[in-house]
Length: 293
Image (tube, rainbow, N blue to C red; front, side, top):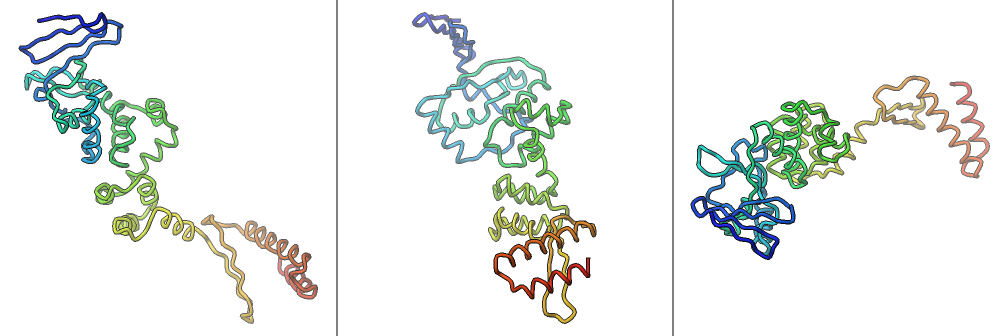
């Protein structure tokens, strides 16, 4: 092992047999090793499965300019004689694209449970997860495997609990709908709106329309608002007029209906006082309303 000190700040330990260069910051910032890329491999149990090609190419260009700034976290893998990635697979993939022969790594020895917890937390803190299903499944795994509550997840990720609940809601869609939206890279807000539909058939229809770009998330919201209205319709016996009152609640009591009609009547009366209606017409409406409460 060849050890050298550079500038009083950094100490290098070279192990040619292992192909490693361990770098220690004498200012107390920890140590990491420069490990050959060919000796590193991803963890097959890594929760994150999808990596955007565009994102990797962009990171690779940055790495070509400034290198890998944040070391990967790896562990010794006796089976391969190399190292298995704990965190930093995206940096590893981008470094390979950039053509790097070695990358900085922090070598740790942790058990399987702690490794998975590290990977989940790191992945879920990223905003570029394949939206939104990979993130939701990661949260779900964190809750089931480590008995986290939604509040625990929110604290770990620095998010609001309502945000975590919304993230999880996309899993209410059938698996085939999730896969369709995943392939189309549909954003979270649209996936949440589709998952809010209780009828799987309706979810599939909406997903198909979204993928074909026939509707946007705003179109879906507009349709939901329209369909959520519960109308009361009154048509006069002589067919001269129709009165329609729409409610956003699915069940409306007689008291609520009469209250709405009374509010409408008061609004009409106020408008008549501003000269929009003739006095005789106002008297007729008031008489009719009083006789038919």
